[in-house]
Length: 104
Image 1 (cartoon, rainbow, N blue to C red):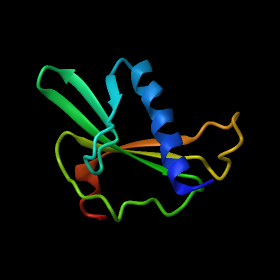
Image 2: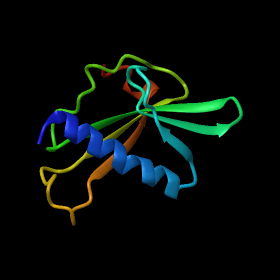
Image 3: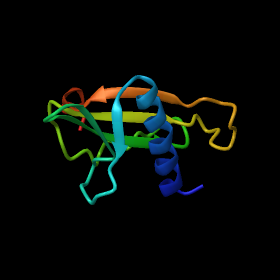
Image 4: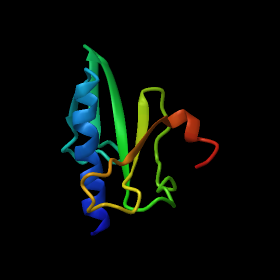
């Protein structure tokens, strides 16, 4: 499985979860770097999300985090080395980008 497929699988895994929690979320199909999902909370109140997919369990790709902002989050999805095991649910972590600034 390629990295591209892992990231795409992670984005499509996250999107329905956000809707289940009641968020109005859409995939970002534009060329905006590091924005995979846009969540509209109210008129003019938008949250952007960068989804990071990982087929294994180590080496989260945070070295390319370009943006630190109040309404910008990263969602990490680890498929735990079992990408093709459809009965295994991945681990998901939601992190405000400001929390990553000391690590990036």
